[in-house]
Length: 344
Image (cartoon, rainbow, N blue to C red; front, side, top):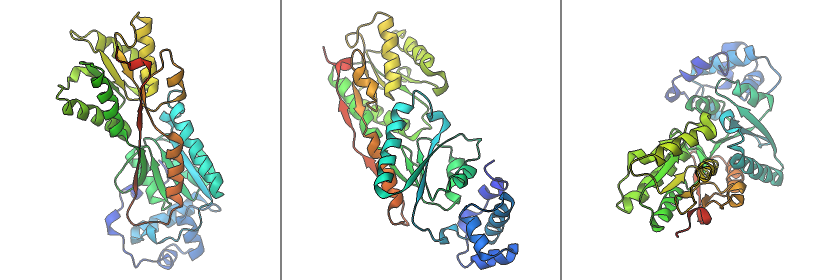
């Protein structure tokens, strides 16, 4: 639960807000001052949870439009990262995103707080604790968490995530998946597999779409046996099992496009331990261009994402003048060809 009245909050009729309801009306209904009501709705410090809950409950019951709250200058941004991304495998991607956000905040004189949260943790309490004026959500978050954050009424931008009604900034994931698969096709590979994470993640879903589109455009049959989802919780063991499956097929894969570099590096390690030659026996391409990609032996071909630029763009969007229409920014990507997929 994110607040005492979270269920009531999510169940409120979002489309039934009545614009003429004022802070004075809420103050009258609660017996509190207008100032207290304003601070409670803005989630400012200096009051009890019971007071906040009472004000929110009255605001929702009366149909108050949270968009009426005046937003002052942004002085502190909360950088939210889902706990599932706060791992060794994910940090090579999200650490540079955080650094890019920090760089933009320093330039603008804005403080940045890093908060790693899970779906069962009091995320709204963390926002209040850090006294954040705006929120930058990096990576996947459950829809219920995003709804709760949106209801707070603070500016919010999604990075490496997309959801209707939210401003977001993403790499061109679909284009990246297309470029990686097109490269393998041009290398003469006929049985191209894809290792994916959960397709509930927007970025992975789009990379998979690019993979399929490239096969379609090349008039290559998309074989369901060549698409394997690797559960995030299984780590490298899940990658090993996926590779065993792909290489034991009657017609095994001769190339693999992996949804990120960590997965690609684990796949390549398994193949090399099995005595396979990369790329002679199997070509491999990753996604993200983390530092370990170029340092691998052989160096890993990948799709380069400017991760720092994602973080900078997210902060810049938060600091822009609010717009009624959410912005959707897409940053370009490039294919980086290295020895793991050279055409021999």
